[in-house]
Length: 495
Image (cartoon, rainbow, N blue to C red):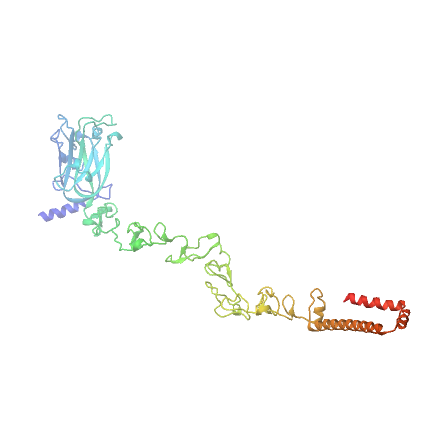
């Protein structure tokens, strides 16, 4: 008999209200629930159960309302209903007595799951509170509950200092004046239109939102992230209802936040952005391991490709601007390579020509001519420089002059006799010159010798002659004789 009753009750609960997709869970049929209130009814016909009899008429004279005794004023009153078992309550419809609803101002609604319950101290079960400063409540009101519960409490109090903007509300005392309470919902593990949908097993205790089935009361798995009870593994986070891979690089390899995708402890080195998904300026590629090249004006390269979109600094090779253009090397690609063999470029770091040099250039840098070569391509031979020193690589000049017998700017011209005659300002005493001077001196000496010898002989002859001979000799003196004597004296004077 009892099992038949339970089946009959379940069938009754699936009967829909004419205006609601949910079942009216309480009507006083002796089985659906038990209603009580904190004060005696003002009339034996106005018991607490009248508020769940299914009659929504708000005229108390029809004996369909729950009304407390008005001969005793109460600062606090309550009315509650306890269902036979827990249900997924969607909302309540409360119909107050049409001529006394204003005195319900400041009321509260609670749900409860055990008979031991103290509503004012258990705020987590508070469903609704009517602010007395917001005016009078409506005579019929719809209040969303959306909870899996077994009991509902209506309570109204007049605490010290109570004030209300509802002018007809009593500020000191209140009473119960409820004509009907509809508890609309489904079985505790069902939801939606006609209560045809079943709550997911992912929901805690298989309790879900009465309207859409989401797990608003929690998930069976404590690691679930959303009302859909999605569980994501480490290294993933919830996005658009799915677990997707963390987009960035978190400090120390720690997984991202499973709800937000962000790195709660900060980004790994060289990473930045809301999700640590971008390289910091100056680095690029998927691992941010590539360092940007020398972009023009110290610009930032593309974070993915590393390309310098606005071009490179001088002597750098596009698009990465990391290597020197052929012919230059060094940290800043400012040093020009030497003359490498076959026009090859030098080493970008050291400047060495790994395959050797062009003809007449010196390894390993190929920037200097071989000894005794000069000119743009080291194609010209040096002249005969003094001390066997090479000439200037640029001009071909001999820094210390030419060896003997050579002349000219590059010491390539042989000196000749005519060259010597053209330079009287620099007389040179050769062996022939010395011989000639000696012969002249000898000739002069011989002339002087003959002159003196002749004069000596003449003096001896004059001494041995007779006087008559002397006179004759004197008589023989003539101007010609005197002239010869003067010439001889002149010659001696010159010597």
